Amino acid sequence: MADAILVSNLSLEYHVLQRKGILSMRKKAVVRALDSVSFSIKRGEIVAVLGNNGAGKSTLLAAVSGKIRPSEGSVETHGMVFTLQGSNPGLINDLSARENIRMLASSYGIEESDVPSLESEIEDFCDLGDAFDRKLSTLSSGQNGRVGFGFITSLNPDILLMDETLGVGDKNFRKKAEEKSKAFMERGETILLSTHSLNLAKNMCSRGLVLEKGILAFDGPVEEAIDYYLGR
Image (tube, rainbow, N blue to C red; front, top):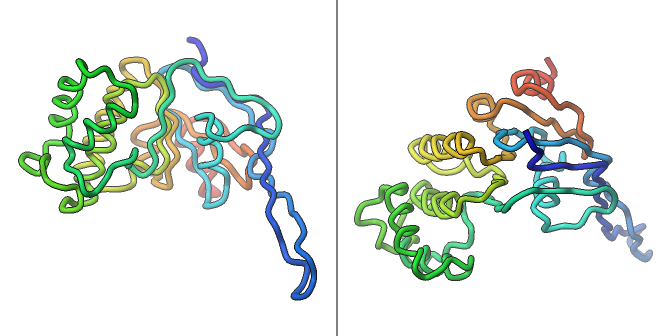
Protein backbone atom coordinates (compact mmCIF):
# COMPACT_ATOMS: atom_id res chain seq x y z
CA MET A 1 0.00 0.00 0.00
CA ALA A 2 1.28 3.47 -0.87
CA ASP A 3 2.53 5.96 1.69
CA ALA A 4 0.15 8.73 2.68
CA ILE A 5 2.74 10.51 4.84
CA LEU A 6 6.51 10.31 4.56
CA VAL A 7 8.63 12.17 7.12
CA SER A 8 12.40 12.08 6.59
CA ASN A 9 14.97 13.40 9.10
CA LEU A 10 12.58 16.13 10.19
CA SER A 11 14.07 18.72 12.53
CA LEU A 12 12.54 21.98 13.64
CA GLU A 13 14.14 24.73 15.68
CA TYR A 14 12.69 27.77 17.40
CA HIS A 15 14.65 30.84 18.41
CA VAL A 16 13.61 32.42 21.69
CA LEU A 17 14.96 35.45 23.54
CA GLN A 18 16.41 34.93 27.01
CA ARG A 19 17.69 37.46 29.52
CA LYS A 20 21.28 36.93 30.64
CA GLY A 21 20.68 39.04 33.75
CA ILE A 22 18.59 41.88 35.16
CA LEU A 23 20.72 44.59 33.53
CA SER A 24 22.14 42.64 30.63
CA MET A 25 20.94 42.32 27.07
CA ARG A 26 18.80 39.44 25.87
CA LYS A 27 20.33 36.64 23.87
CA LYS A 28 18.83 34.20 21.40
CA ALA A 29 18.48 30.59 22.49
CA VAL A 30 17.73 27.72 20.14
CA VAL A 31 14.99 25.27 21.08
CA ARG A 32 14.99 22.06 19.04
CA ALA A 33 11.32 21.06 19.02
CA LEU A 34 11.84 18.09 16.67
CA ASP A 35 15.13 16.27 16.14
CA SER A 36 15.74 14.00 13.12
CA VAL A 37 12.28 12.41 13.13
CA SER A 38 11.60 9.83 10.40
CA PHE A 39 8.58 7.60 9.75
CA SER A 40 6.07 6.70 7.07
CA ILE A 41 2.32 6.09 7.33
CA LYS A 42 0.44 3.96 4.83
CA ARG A 43 -2.86 5.01 3.37
CA GLY A 44 -5.71 3.89 5.63
CA GLU A 45 -3.67 3.71 8.85
CA ILE A 46 -4.85 5.33 12.08
CA VAL A 47 -1.73 6.19 14.06
CA ALA A 48 -1.50 7.66 17.57
CA VAL A 49 1.13 10.22 18.54
CA LEU A 50 1.93 9.91 22.24
CA GLY A 51 4.15 11.96 24.51
CA ASN A 52 4.25 14.29 27.48
CA ASN A 53 3.47 17.99 27.18
CA GLY A 54 6.29 19.65 25.26
CA ALA A 55 7.37 16.42 23.57
CA GLY A 56 6.67 17.88 20.11
CA LYS A 57 3.30 16.31 19.23
CA SER A 58 1.54 19.49 18.10
CA THR A 59 4.68 20.69 16.33
CA LEU A 60 4.85 17.42 14.41
CA LEU A 61 1.24 17.73 13.26
CA ALA A 62 1.82 21.35 12.25
CA ALA A 63 4.82 20.30 10.16
CA VAL A 64 2.88 17.48 8.50
CA SER A 65 0.03 19.89 7.71
CA GLY A 66 2.45 22.34 6.10
CA LYS A 67 1.74 25.15 8.58
CA ILE A 68 5.39 25.33 9.61
CA ARG A 69 8.49 24.73 7.52
CA PRO A 70 11.11 22.22 8.70
CA SER A 71 14.54 23.50 9.67
CA GLU A 72 15.96 20.28 8.23
CA GLY A 73 14.55 17.23 6.49
CA SER A 74 11.30 16.89 4.59
CA VAL A 75 7.62 16.02 4.83
CA GLU A 76 5.67 14.49 1.95
CA THR A 77 1.89 14.04 1.97
CA HIS A 78 -0.23 12.47 -0.74
CA GLY A 79 -3.78 13.79 -0.90
CA MET A 80 -5.84 16.53 0.71
CA VAL A 81 -4.82 17.27 4.32
CA PHE A 82 -7.01 18.86 6.98
CA THR A 83 -6.23 19.58 10.62
CA LEU A 84 -8.75 19.64 13.45
CA GLN A 85 -7.49 21.03 16.73
CA GLY A 86 -9.76 20.96 19.75
CA SER A 87 -12.83 20.31 17.56
CA ASN A 88 -13.10 23.96 16.42
CA PRO A 89 -12.22 24.76 12.78
CA GLY A 90 -13.16 28.44 13.21
CA LEU A 91 -16.68 28.50 14.59
CA ILE A 92 -18.29 31.81 15.62
CA ASN A 93 -20.29 31.75 18.85
CA ASP A 94 -22.79 34.40 17.76
CA LEU A 95 -23.90 32.27 14.80
CA SER A 96 -25.94 29.09 14.79
CA ALA A 97 -24.47 25.73 13.76
CA ARG A 98 -26.27 26.00 10.41
CA GLU A 99 -25.00 29.56 9.81
CA ASN A 100 -21.46 28.52 10.78
CA ILE A 101 -21.51 25.63 8.32
CA ARG A 102 -22.63 27.88 5.48
CA MET A 103 -19.94 30.44 6.33
CA LEU A 104 -17.19 27.82 6.64
CA ALA A 105 -18.30 26.11 3.43
CA SER A 106 -17.73 29.38 1.59
CA SER A 107 -14.32 29.97 3.19
CA TYR A 108 -13.22 26.38 2.41
CA GLY A 109 -14.20 26.79 -1.24
CA ILE A 110 -17.18 24.43 -1.26
CA GLU A 111 -19.32 24.84 -4.36
CA GLU A 112 -22.63 26.54 -3.58
CA SER A 113 -24.54 23.67 -5.17
CA ASP A 114 -22.87 21.22 -2.74
CA VAL A 115 -23.67 23.18 0.44
CA PRO A 116 -27.22 21.79 1.03
CA SER A 117 -26.04 18.16 1.01
CA LEU A 118 -23.04 19.05 3.20
CA GLU A 119 -25.32 20.86 5.62
CA SER A 120 -27.72 17.90 5.76
CA GLU A 121 -24.88 15.41 6.42
CA ILE A 122 -23.50 17.50 9.29
CA GLU A 123 -26.95 18.07 10.78
CA ASP A 124 -27.52 14.30 10.85
CA PHE A 125 -24.13 13.71 12.49
CA CYS A 126 -24.61 16.42 15.11
CA ASP A 127 -28.10 15.19 16.08
CA LEU A 128 -28.84 18.48 17.88
CA GLY A 129 -32.48 18.84 16.93
CA ASP A 130 -33.73 22.43 17.25
CA ALA A 131 -30.42 23.43 18.84
CA PHE A 132 -28.85 23.25 15.38
CA ASP A 133 -30.40 26.67 14.73
CA ARG A 134 -29.45 28.23 18.08
CA LYS A 135 -26.35 30.34 18.69
CA LEU A 136 -23.32 28.24 19.51
CA SER A 137 -22.85 30.27 22.69
CA THR A 138 -25.97 28.60 24.09
CA LEU A 139 -24.71 25.06 23.40
CA SER A 140 -22.48 22.79 25.48
CA SER A 141 -18.85 22.10 24.60
CA GLY A 142 -19.85 18.62 23.47
CA GLN A 143 -22.51 20.00 21.13
CA ASN A 144 -20.03 22.53 19.72
CA GLY A 145 -17.53 19.71 19.25
CA ARG A 146 -19.99 17.80 17.11
CA VAL A 147 -20.40 20.77 14.79
CA GLY A 148 -16.66 21.34 14.29
CA PHE A 149 -15.78 17.69 13.93
CA GLY A 150 -18.78 17.04 11.70
CA PHE A 151 -17.77 19.85 9.37
CA ILE A 152 -14.12 18.89 8.92
CA THR A 153 -14.78 15.18 8.47
CA SER A 154 -17.59 15.85 5.99
CA LEU A 155 -15.05 17.54 3.71
CA ASN A 156 -13.62 14.04 3.10
CA PRO A 157 -9.89 14.78 3.38
CA ASP A 158 -7.46 12.04 2.41
CA ILE A 159 -5.41 12.74 5.55
CA LEU A 160 -6.94 13.97 8.80
CA LEU A 161 -4.67 15.33 11.54
CA MET A 162 -6.37 15.49 14.94
CA ASP A 163 -4.74 17.30 17.86
CA GLU A 164 -6.52 16.31 21.10
CA THR A 165 -9.80 16.55 19.21
CA LEU A 166 -11.40 13.41 20.61
CA GLY A 167 -10.46 14.24 24.17
CA VAL A 168 -12.91 17.16 24.30
CA GLY A 169 -16.66 17.22 24.50
CA ASP A 170 -19.02 14.79 26.18
CA LYS A 171 -19.10 10.99 26.09
CA ASN A 172 -21.73 10.89 23.32
CA PHE A 173 -19.63 13.16 21.10
CA ARG A 174 -16.50 11.06 21.60
CA LYS A 175 -18.39 7.90 20.69
CA LYS A 176 -19.84 9.44 17.50
CA ALA A 177 -16.45 10.90 16.57
CA GLU A 178 -14.71 7.56 17.04
CA GLU A 179 -17.30 5.84 14.85
CA LYS A 180 -16.85 8.41 12.10
CA SER A 181 -13.07 8.15 12.37
CA LYS A 182 -13.23 4.38 11.93
CA ALA A 183 -15.44 4.88 8.87
CA PHE A 184 -12.59 7.03 7.51
CA MET A 185 -10.21 4.12 7.83
CA GLU A 186 -12.64 1.76 6.09
CA ARG A 187 -12.76 4.17 3.13
CA GLY A 188 -8.98 4.20 2.96
CA GLU A 189 -8.35 7.63 4.50
CA THR A 190 -5.47 8.21 6.92
CA ILE A 191 -5.60 9.63 10.44
CA LEU A 192 -2.74 10.89 12.60
CA LEU A 193 -4.08 11.39 16.12
CA SER A 194 -2.24 13.28 18.85
CA THR A 195 -3.76 12.40 22.21
CA HIS A 196 -3.14 12.03 25.94
CA SER A 197 -5.94 9.47 26.15
CA LEU A 198 -4.31 6.04 26.16
CA ASN A 199 -7.67 4.27 26.08
CA LEU A 200 -8.61 6.24 22.98
CA ALA A 201 -5.30 5.40 21.32
CA LYS A 202 -5.74 1.71 22.15
CA ASN A 203 -9.34 1.60 20.90
CA MET A 204 -8.80 3.49 17.65
CA CYS A 205 -5.23 2.98 16.52
CA SER A 206 -3.18 0.00 15.38
CA ARG A 207 0.15 1.79 15.70
CA GLY A 208 1.75 4.36 17.98
CA LEU A 209 4.56 6.88 17.74
CA VAL A 210 6.10 8.03 21.03
CA LEU A 211 7.89 11.38 21.12
CA GLU A 212 10.35 12.31 23.86
CA LYS A 213 11.77 15.84 23.83
CA GLY A 214 11.38 16.06 20.06
CA ILE A 215 12.90 12.65 19.33
CA LEU A 216 10.94 9.70 17.95
CA ALA A 217 11.65 7.23 20.75
CA PHE A 218 9.32 4.41 19.67
CA ASP A 219 7.37 3.37 16.57
CA GLY A 220 5.37 0.16 16.64
CA PRO A 221 2.12 -1.58 17.61
CA VAL A 222 -0.05 0.73 19.70
CA GLU A 223 -0.15 -1.49 22.80
CA GLU A 224 3.65 -1.67 22.81
CA ALA A 225 3.80 2.09 22.27
CA ILE A 226 1.57 2.63 25.31
CA ASP A 227 3.74 0.31 27.40
CA TYR A 228 6.84 2.20 26.30
CA TYR A 229 5.20 5.55 27.09
CA LEU A 230 4.24 4.32 30.57
CA GLY A 231 7.75 2.98 31.15
CA ARG A 232 6.69 -0.64 31.33
